[in-house]
Length: 329
Image (cartoon, rainbow, N blue to C red; front, side, top):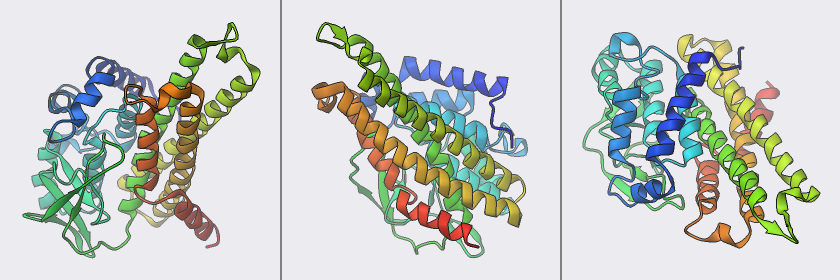
C-alpha cells in the first residue's frame, strides 16, 4: 500500500483548507449550526459545484470525478480541522454503499443526483442516522442490496456536538455489513482533522500565554504533553490512511482478501482514533485553562466533537474486541 499523498492530493487538501479558512471560521461555524438544516448551504453548494467534493468517488459514467474514497477522506480531514458542519460524511457513506451494493438502475439514477450536490445518507443504526432530516436520498441495506426509503418517518434527535445532526428513521435494523466498516474508516478522517486542530490550537496558545514571565510552552512538562499529542495525531493519521485505503480497495475489488483487510484496518483505526481524539480534546481543554470551557472558544467544540465521533459507528472498546476476534480467526 502507498500511504503518501500525491501532488494532486496535496493540492486538493490545500484548496479545501483555503476555502474553509475563508468561509468556515469560528463565527461561520456558530452561525451554521443555528440554521434549520444545521450547515452552511451556500458553502456546501460551492464545495460541490466548484470543487466537486460529492462527486469525487463517483464513476465518470455517472457524472462523477472517478477518484476514490482516499480523496474523499482528504476532504473530510480538512472539514474535521475546520470543525465545519457538513453533510459530506453522510453523503460519502451513502455513495460508497451505492457503488458497492447498488443496482445498475440505482447507480444510474441516484449517483448523478449526489454528484450534483443532493444530500444522501445510509441507515446503519435506525436510532442514530447522520443527516437523515436533511437528506433527499435515504438508503438502507437489505440482504438483496440497497433500498431507497421514500416517505420514511424521521425524528430529529439532540446532539452534544451542535455541528452534527442526527435523527431516528422508522425502518427495520439492517444486518451488519462491510458498509459499517467503510463508514468507520471515513469517520476516522474527520477525527484526524479535529485532532490536528486541537494540537495546532494548543501549540499556538502555549506560545502566547505567559506565566511567571515566560510563555507556558517553554515549560518542559508542557512540551512533553504536546509532544505526546503530536505522536497521537500522526499515529491516528497513519491508521486512518490505512483504513480508507482498504475501503477504496474493497470498493474497487470486493473480494474476500480485501474484505478481511477492510475489517481489520477499519476496526483498528476507529478504536485508535477515537481514544486519541478523546485524549487530545482533553489536553486541549486542560492546556488552555479556564478559557477553554467558554462558549466563545473553539476548544469546547473539539471536546464535543470528540465525544460524538467516538460513539458513532461503534465505540473504541467494541472495535478493539473486533480486532481481537479477527486476529483469532
